[in-house]
Length: 118
Length: 110
Image (cartoon, rainbow over all chains, first blue to last red; front, side, top):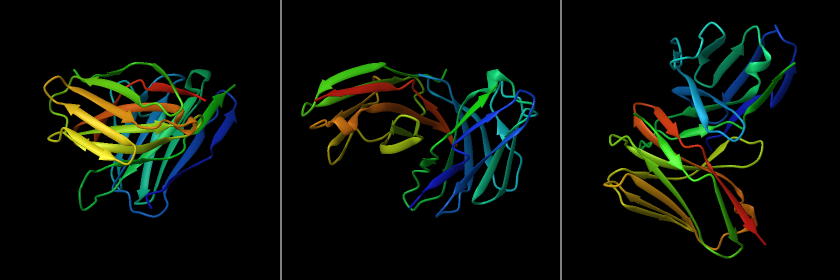
């Protein structure tokens, strides 16, 4: 159990266009979903945290108008990169968390989406 | 501040033990995690330890936590070529916020 999927797994787009990335928890209800960005050979940078039905909380330095996050249901969150530019090219990873009996609040990660903006 | 540091590279021979070290700065961390990332993939949770524990063993994996020194280590016994990956140390610092290290690239030589 605890599988998280992302779609698409990779996307190439032209500069100025918008790209939507989906994150789904397949076999559990995710109370909270997270969006990370990972640069080559670097760690994950948390972009935002979203709870179902409420607005996402963005980390400092992350433009909320550029990276739109919607968490419409307990199994789906979307990240839309608006007016994408080459510097937005990166590996975007989502994770989801659920309450467990032992309450580790473990995050389960999706496989990531590689975005390349030309 | 919140910071997690780990060495960037480790090379071992197949069958040997691997030890990956990590230091963190936030003393209020509740959980500490080890994740594995294979090329082009997301992160896979390997194991975690609660901050009031000092050791946890799970099959080939042993986690040691020295809370006084804010030092965490992951030992992989009988390392196999399939263990080659990037290993991330992470700490939960409050609520759901998790801080990740830069990752240690483990290379296993046959």
